[in-house]
Image (cartoon, rainbow, N blue to C red; front, top):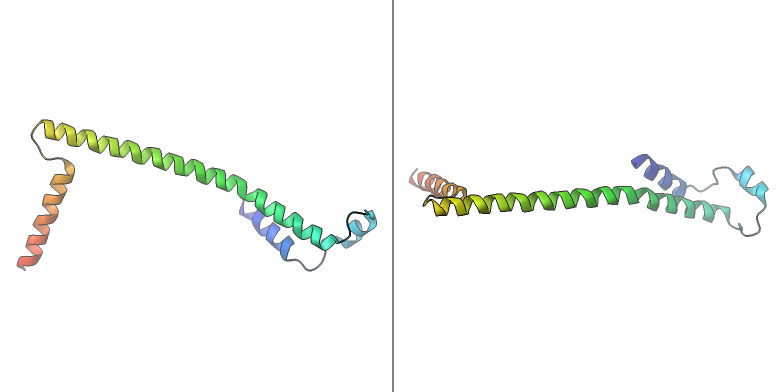
Length: 108
């Protein structure tokens, strides 16, 4: 999709028409500034090329949020299960491990 963006940007930054002969021969009364129309077309092409990227980004973000929510629910269930059994959950074990590392570093 990036090839479309590069092409659109090159069309927008052009100082001459892509095909001056063809478009000038059309002699359309509403097309008074062909270069401005070309730049507008490049802008529209660039904007339309970004829509699929935005949709893919939105889908990825939604999947990311869903996966994060599922992971949080899994951690909460494991913590509840550990608390019901009178054990430490993963977070408490990890915090105890970090405290041991800190004490070891301070003693050296």
